[in-house]
Image (cartoon, rainbow, N blue to C red; front, side):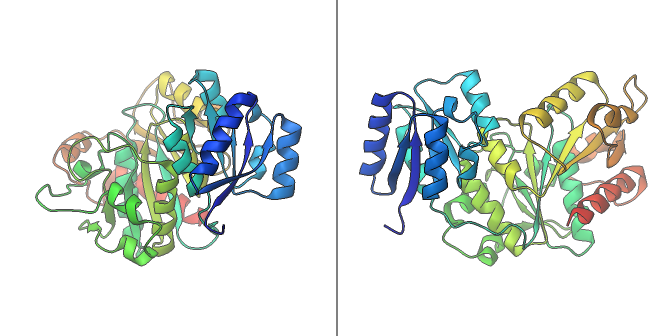
Length: 357
C-alpha cells in the first residue's frame, strides 16, 4: 500500500460520505483511513493518522484542523460562491462537484501521495499576479526574468496565465519551431529529474528559458494544480529563479500556486479599480510578507504611488513609469532595451526579489 494515498474523509451528509468513500477505495489508488462528521473528529483524525490529505465538505474546512494535513481537496454536491470561497480560504488544491466530477476527485486524491518537497533549498519561485486585467503582469514577469538572467542566475519564465497565456508572443517565441510548453512539462514532471525538465526549453536571446502555456496561440488546456506545483518544484530544483506569470486568475488552482511561491509580485496601476481588486486578492488569497507591490505605467493621476503604502501598509518595491515604447515593443515580441527609467525600475524590483533569496 506504499503507493496508495491515505486520506481522511470529512463530509457531513452520511449518504454522500458513504458513496465517496467506497468510490475512492475502489480506485485502488486511494485509501480512506478515517471519516469525520464534524471539526472535532476531523482534527483528531488528522492528528493521530497524519494522512497525505483531507477530502472534505467546504462547511468542515472553516476551522484549522484540515490545515494540519498535507493537502486539502474540497467536494460538494453543488458549486456555490460560498463553498468556493471557503475552499480557497482553507487552501484547497481543488474543488469537485459530486458525483459529476468524481473522476477528477479520484485523480487529485491519488496525487496527494507525491513526496513532500523541501522548498527551503533550490531555486526561488516568483509568482507575478495582477488582480485586474491589463495591469501588465506579463510585461513585468518577462522583463524581471531578463533582469535576473543578466545577473547570471539560471532563470525560467513559466506562463501559468491559463487559459490565455501571452508570454510566448510577448517575448517573440518563434511560431515555426516546436517548443516544450506547460502541458508537456506537467505530463512528465513526476517521471523525470529536474535537469531533464529544464532541458529542451526555448531560450531567449537575453539568457532565460521560456515555457509557454501552450504550443501555439490557442487557449491553453486546463491543467490540474497538483501537476503545476510539481512543475514549479522541478524547475526550481534546476534553476536559480522560476518567474511564473499567473495573470489574474482566482480560485483553488491559483491558491495552490501562490502557496509554493517564495515571492508574490502584485502588479497594480494607479486607479481605484486596480487598488480594490488588489486588496481583495491580498485578503482572499492569504498573501503575507511574501507580497511585493509594483506600480506599472505610473503617470500623474489622482491616485499616487504613495497611496500603496497607505492602503497596503508598505511602499511599492518599484514604480515603473509609463512609456509609449512598451506597446510597440510588445506588439513586435520584443523586450525593452536594458536602459532608461523603465529598466531602472525593473532593476529595483530585481534587487528586492534577490534579497528575498
